[in-house]
Amino acid sequence: MINNLDLINNLDQIDWNKLDGGAGTAYAIPGLFRDLISTDEAKVSASFDSLAKTVLNQDTHIEIILATIPFLIDIMHLPVIKLHARLALLLGALAESSPNGSF
Image 1 (cartoon, rainbow, N blue to C red):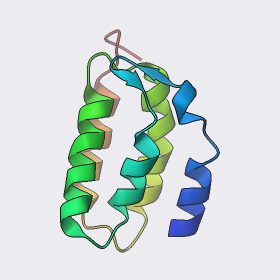
Image 2 (image 1 turned 90 degrees about the vertical axis):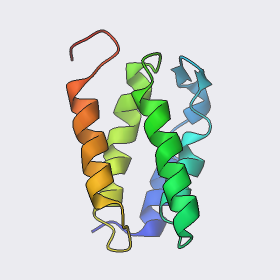
Image 3 (image 1 turned 180 degrees about the vertical axis):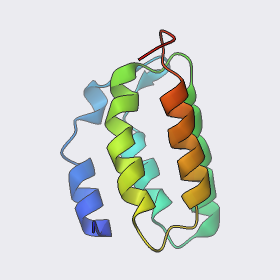
């Protein structure tokens, strides 16, 4: 099972600044994932909303979407996360969509 430290270390393995999205680079994504594992419920909710908007944006490139999926799955395995249902719905929405209409 992954723990918070493993998740953070794995986030730092990706050069998010090089992943280009429709609204710019993905530089903010690691911070959003870090906030998802916060104990501050308002911060968790706000970071989830921002992350969902970013990855579901029609201009977001597939490279960003593919880079986020493993972290969404890892976060779902953390027992402290209270967003399991919302994370599952986000993963489902990502599975049904892609920038060009099909994977």
